[in-house]
Length: 410
Image (tube, rainbow, N blue to C red; front, side, top):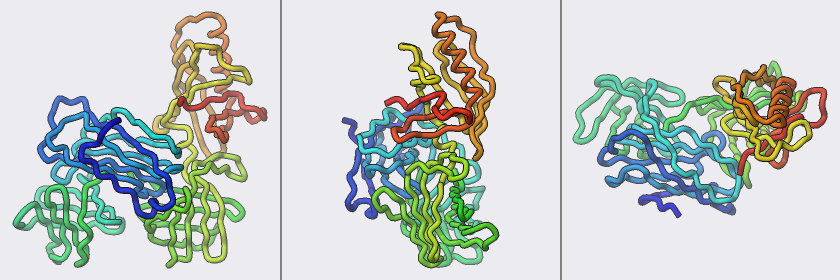
């Protein structure tokens, strides 16, 4: 059992009622031969759909060095994205890549999570002040404070302790760093104490549906719903989520809108393309049903192990794998004898894979024949699906049965 260092775990009260919890444990490390600075703070966040905070572990290093163990508990049946950071003087210095956990109820052992030096692109820190998220960057004797709607330039002023920056025209607007925490006042209202959190990209979330053709986008804390083609968009601030069962519910009463996101695979009614979430939007007296997220998220960032090729089990002790890279749009893996890679394209219309390029190792005839058949099938693929067991099914348009079946190990 891995024990956290003075770990404090926060599970949102909205999720604590009527839900089982599953433990998650791991440790943080990095390869550099450098010591953590005195007073370094370790932060691990688990977030669900639409950046909903599910759990947090936050503790002081206490002079200890990597590897640093941690633990937290998550609600059952809810997926999460985990990010970690080492923070010094309110700024992240080491950060992890995002780790995706699928919904489940079994304990999760993450093992060692590798950290990389943080190189900010414009903003040095991301802060959480109660329910508000802010970004702050520094240039000479100025600070730039960015909210979802405003960017404020502040100038440094004298302070009894820490570093304080104010709006030259309004001293009631300020950012005051006080070690591991900060105070922020916007238009005269002081926010709850701010703490640094792991930085993350702000990617728009999209949902869509047919009959009627509606669309919804969430970006920068704002929700925009177009109830039907040609209609005026309806906008609202994204509120804190509630959890009903395993559904994330966002109640925007002021706009007459309730958004419900379920981590259940949804298929487009026209193309059959699968998406990671099922979405329901109640707007006025209308209920709009559709799909949310991006199809790529169902494929990329994981290794699929092939079980069947053209209706036949793969040869014992041979290993065929598929790894889709969302950034480079390259497919790579093992063909049973040689490693390969190929370009692929994924759109709302389907999936296509180009000719594979492979190494030239020679194997026994059955393995070579299986590999060549596997490579030829890849170029015939036109769509994919995920079945109820989580298996990846790859089809050609002229086939009812999948040409390739693969699944995640474990």
